[in-house]
Length: 498
Length: 97
Image (cartoon, rainbow over all chains, first blue to last red; front, side, top):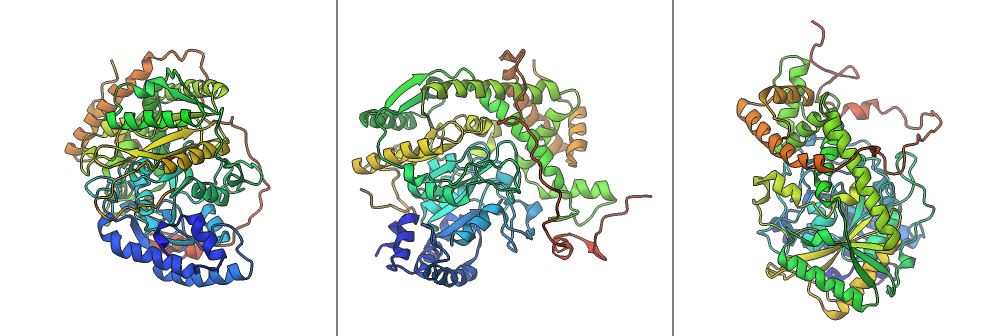
């Protein structure tokens, strides 16, 4: 049996039917890791011994009826900004290089209760600030489809691990596109849930009004199943919302006849790569062919999304990252004179360039004399962006957009010009500013064989709609045999489809 | 014209952000910030008169709970992460002269 080609739900089903043991699934993941990790470097830490022990425990738990869910026994990787008790959680930063949390993030407790098996922690941009996973203090991750290219970011390790079959699924986090953009670059499926859908207790904060944890998987059904596991109210995160029992899997029919899709006309203007545009337009035709209604509409605030996002995200980052001062945890400089010098040296030596850049920008836009002109102006802009999306959702069930203006850049290209890198987030940041759910689904590839993803965006708490649309599209895509990446490396997982 | 970022502003930002940069790094930071502010200046075109700033997407109401201790004493465990600790306390450089 080809274990690699199974989705997480397929693996879970075979485990319950006793066709595959839990240990076999875990072994498969570690044999893939052994084969590929040297070239991909998706992980910062691996829990091989613990995962094997846990597999036996889960095997028994399934037999005893303790674990009854569809993902029981399924291996999962976790982005390294999510706390796992007793295990290093570094955020890919030197300043947290030796930090070992004394508690689990709420999502980790929920994975445990579902009988899932954590295999390790994945690489990321330092503190989730970056779009390529190149700002990690612990080395870059490579795109499994072509190792000369980045996996995207900031959840690049999670997406590369799924793409390479080094895990069945993964958790990422998304503040401005950090799940949806690397999912597009790596040819996997990734969902950023509605703000408040998933508890952020134990997620190291970047920009608290924007951050959400979400699933990365091989297909839409896997993401839906994982969201059911991690979603829901948690008293420990007062921004998490009680939506009752979550059931997305039940909604996933293939019927999207009459469903209304809106495409922001401005998104297809300048800056969009030709190949990405062609694949995107082709996907629109596929949806129309399935009986969906696809229309263009105008988003007048498009040019203001990135400015508003980077002001707000940097402002919140500068405040959230004040806590790293070398006193209670993490790195402390070796030599200093007095308390303030200790703070300064610790932070200067502990943070990488991109993090410092954003902390400084954030400190500036919040500082006396500039607060109104920058921060407050950005919050007002956010209100106008939200109004535009609110209006759009009166007309459309789902908004469609490319996940990124281009496919995965070559390694070493993006960090030369930070502003140019920020502009690459143009299609993803509004979703965070407005708290909306968005999913990226692979929909084709460019001339070089690099994956292209389409983003489906829903109104707040309308995850079921985007999951249904994404699932229906995915089914059609596979029946048409659309290729979503050309594997020249032997590292990426080609799922036998259809 | 967007705000001109001079050395004084960078010095002030370094104090606020608790960072100590070399002269070379300061110059780079100044250039980076200038470039970013020149770009975000775009927001000035947008008419936001009468628009309420939006911070929390679902309206900000307080979430209350009973003030009950639910976690146990974790002093020892917490101190394991401290760069320096002594007698059950975090140890910091001398703060009073």
